Length: 314
View 1: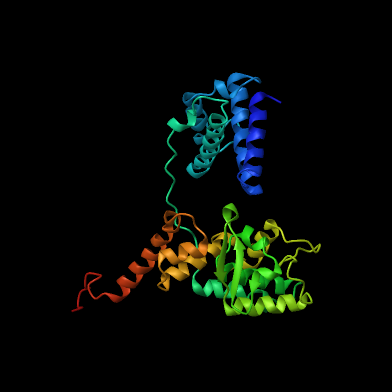
View 2: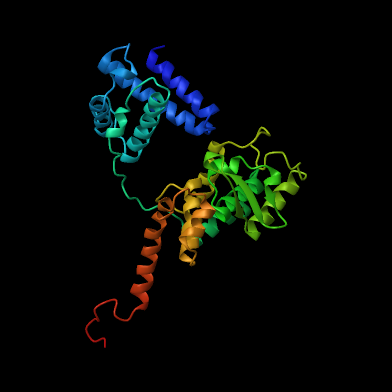
């Protein structure tokens, strides 16, 4: 193991023990930094060290990521992916400086790529309702359909991240007040409302399980253990089949749908920010673009001067 790889391992241990970073974050940082190690081996040989990396070499690395290589069959990374990798590199070198292993951070001189502004895809209300009720209307009465319906309803009712949903225990849902306690990014706890329909479906699911103890996982997989993110993703894709066939529906789609429907109904951005657990309002502001599309649609239909009158019209 090279010195650079040892430093990366120590940095990841620091994130786990000192920063209490989530396993997902640590895995993502580790993967991104190992990509840098692979590049360094190509450029500087097996004994590459952090000291041999300067901002020019990092710029070359990012340039390689942004270009496709037909001979190796690799597509160019999206700007958002490059920005994430740069964030991991910047954090790693910042830690090296703080611990006295480097004097300067070469990544500080590199600007984060401007991300593409993509509108979050969401279901309309009819599609969302159809999807929520799909397990109940299934002709073959598949196993776990009560669980699946409870998962769908809770994702849409409360706008949860899939990691937040899989981490729930039975006792995290207060059915008397209609609230749920969830653990978000950075181990930040927040309270979110749960709709009455979602509560009814959850009650039916828990009754089917014989009303388990409050400290047990809320949702179980087929082997009786806490449900995985991958299983939740498969559940969402299964019950969304045919509802929005032109787009792939994921658990995050239901989170986007939750936020968009609240905004269209008149909720303010600050409230949506709190419900989603966003640290910055700028993250929530992407939904204003979706709301603007809806406003323009209403304007076009309702305002008498939205369009030039056709011939014969007053």
